[in-house]
Image (tube, rainbow, N blue to C red; front, side, top):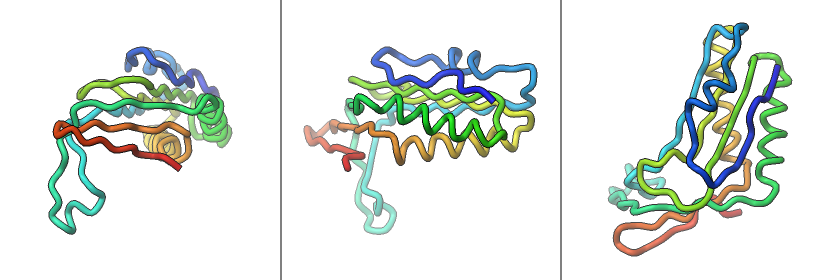
Length: 149
């Protein structure tokens, strides 16, 4: 099992690069997750209290200097359990506009079930544990930091 690509970068991300890095003749399934900057955000309880979504104008991602190392440890751990053939994750930092690709995760496995499972675990654990912070800027001039400790 191989971790093929783990990077935090300031340049635009390529889904094709991640797909190529996880492709393998051993794999019967490849799962990709592509996270993009959406045009709105709302409070976690928006459905409960009826609060309106806020229009997102743009955002900036910042990463701790050890974020890539921490991401590599996560990817290595998931690769080590034998469910995946190849694993990749790339996250962008810096200024992003609505529609820009912020993160790409790729997992190949012998069977589709494992590809989906590991891909979901990787993105969920990545977002929960890797020290990357989002500074959202809203159309009304307000801003908000997300993911700070």
